Image (cartoon, rainbow, N blue to C red; front, side, top):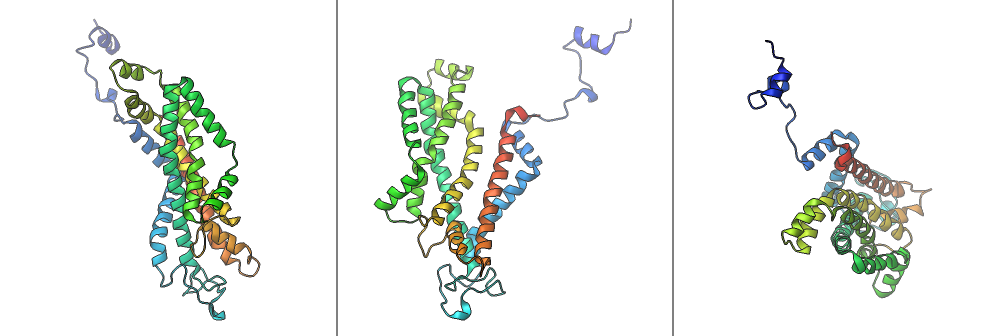
Length: 309
């Protein structure tokens, strides 16, 4: 009697051995390992990540690659409004300041604003939205009405009021961005928590006597980290652009400090005579925002469970 391999496996499941052709080729991976694998396969996202890393490195070391400081003025005619040269790689402005040093000092300030705003958004928004979504009931109603009231106030009005109370500068921009940028994150986290809090693992943790804080920060928030990381990544270029247009309106960083937005604002007035004063800061601020957005889109695709293969 001839028994085919399938029947042998069905009737003798404990004695059947997996052959070489039936072995599992792909090793088991965790969620984050699989997300990193798919992110590496996205060439656009990896290119954006490389550009972001290079911008961070240049923002740190760039101002030290020349002998000039970002605020050193040379008011003689032979030093003002110079084009690119071996001495001044990006040229000089109308006060004789080296644009290469000022661009990378401005990139340092702009990236600092972007990362600090994203960090504040993460800390406040995640905590606020997690508590609101998990507790629910009247607590959720009150907390969300506060978010709606704050969202209804124009952002520019926040900035103008802060300018009246505080002096214009970097700290004012950080306070203004930190005061309102967490609202969208809070809504996002609340929606994620509402969809997860009735899952079996949350009910099991509750049945075992876990506290509400442990359930929120140990079980719910870690399972929301995918959308949170994507939104935080996309919030960095949003904050950089917000600082740029505030500086363009004259409400940004105060002189002699510089940001990319402030350099764009200074260069727009002399675009016809000295276009390099606008080109370099505009190019690098566009490149930074584009790189963060491309990387954020790739990160979103990599962390989406529906795309897991």
